[in-house]
Each structure stands twice: as structure tokens, then as C-alpha cells.
Length: 309
Image 1 (cartoon, rainbow, N blue to C red):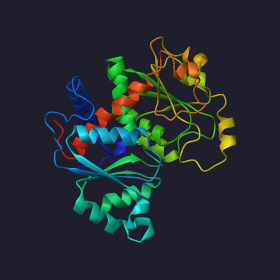
Image 2: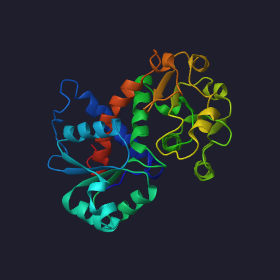
Image 3: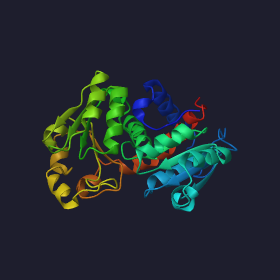
Image 4: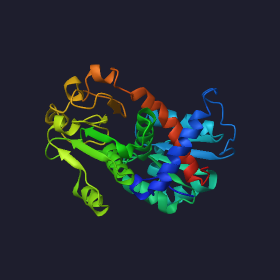
């Protein structure tokens, strides 16, 4: 049993095994329909319990498909429908119940502490579907998409992030250390990654380049990432933050300073941080990126159950 909570805590070799397995499984599904199970049905008979405390479209749908393709079953519960939250049942007691009925627990939450508390009390694997500090399933899938399109290891590419320091960027920073690729971040002053994140990067003998000029950050990039400026986790002044990022829009001018064969990726949903001509243009690979969530998440599940090939 292995948890999948934060990319910084997972060995690079294990992350690579997940990506390799996802590639193999995707290739073998070309003639199968969406809900047809993989021929080996590696998780047949397993029950995965999902709980979403935050809105979700792609994560919810992609994991539903992933679980079915592995031959497992799933049930989605709401925290408000459990004794947890309304009936004063402790996380420890809820974790024991989940461990009794289910084989794995998938949680999307607004609390890093809740993920930690569950992980300490569950006897089944827990997978982080999103938390305030981390979005590991999204970003590992993004690495898969980059390598699929570019047909080379991400370690040989220049990656650029334009936008706020959020949970997606935290996971992108973590994977940049694991896979040793060059990462440029373009963000306004006072929006840089927190000190504890940068200290972790330094302890691992890596460097992240931060620019307060988006064009400099994007120069010669192979891949440009972006995300909503004001995300689900934000509690501050929305108008002020959007104004602070007004010069950090990913548009055709910015993409012109990237490499000629560069691509644009976005975890969705989008806002005003990217222009329509880029988002809907030839360099955008956002739909392929979204679909690949299914394939990588299947291999993440297999990793957690110790069933990677």
C-alpha cells in the first residue's frame, strides 16, 4: 500500500514507472470503448471511495472512467452526508470505517491537514485529488502529455509557468526537481513561491528561475503552462489580484518568444489569463491534456495498490 499525496515525497523512479505504465495502457486501449475494462482488470473486485469537498469536473469524470477501466467499482460520498462534519465523528473514526468498507480513498479537499490526518489513520491507500498545496495527479499527467507530444524526456525541455503560485505550480516545481528540467516562472512581485518551497528546491540542489517579466520567463520555452489567476483556494481581494496579473496574460505576443514548436497547456477551468487565439489555437493541447488524466490516474491507482507492471 502506498499513498499518493505529494509529488515531492515520491521517488523519481516510481514516478517514471507510473508514466511508463500509463503509456503502455493507453496504447492497448485504442480499440476499446470508454467503459470497457482493460483486459487484465488489475483492480477487479476493489472498491474505491471518493469524497469531493470542492468543485470538480475533470478529476471526478476522469477518475470515474479510470476506476471502471481497471475493473474496480467506486462510490462517491459527500462530507456533508457523513457523520464527519455534522455528527462530530472524528477523522480517525471515519478513516477506520472507510478502511473497513473500501480498498482505497480518494479525497479532494480544502485542507492539507485533513489529508494528513486521514493518511495517519487509514489502513488503505489515500490519493490526493487536490489540496491547497498540491495537485499531484494533474501535474504528473501533464508531464505525460508533454513527453507524448514532444517525444522526448521532459528533462530535455524548457518549461515555463505564467501565473500565480498555487497548488498546481507547487506540484510542477516538485516534479521539476524529480525529473531535473528547467523551469521558468513568470509572476508579479509578491506572488513568488513561498520560502519553504524554494528552500526545498535548494536542499535538492536544483534552481527555479523567477521573472517579473512574462516575456523573459517565456523566452525559448518548449511548453507554456498557465492557470486561473483567482482560483478556488483564494480568499483575498479578487479585483486587486486580477489587476496585479493584467500584464501576465498568455497571448500571441508572449507565444512568439517561445520556440517555434512550443505548446500551451492549461489544467482548466480557464479565465482571462489566456487569450482565445492561444487557447483555441494550434499550439494549444488542452483537450489532449485533459484526456490523458484518465490514463495516468489508472497507473497512479495501480502504484498505490502495488500493482505496477
